[in-house]
Image (tube, rainbow, N blue to C red; front, side):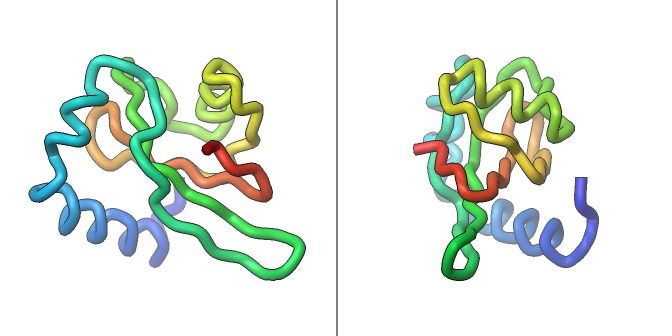
Length: 100
């Protein structure tokens, strides 16, 4: 997990967003799934996409586990970063592999 500026940005953005959108998260609490696209950035020929996801078992706290999670959801994307926001809710980042 990255603890630099990017983590702080996502964490603060999540906590600014969450109070008015908690029902969306509540709808996903009982199932694994992609809640929404969180962010996207990159240059021609390559880019990163991040997604707010629900994992009720709270078991995707590293990139290897998160990558296996995407395979289980039939997306076959390598996760290059994972950030836990709250229990069972993460921001996953992929490189050149959209989850939606």
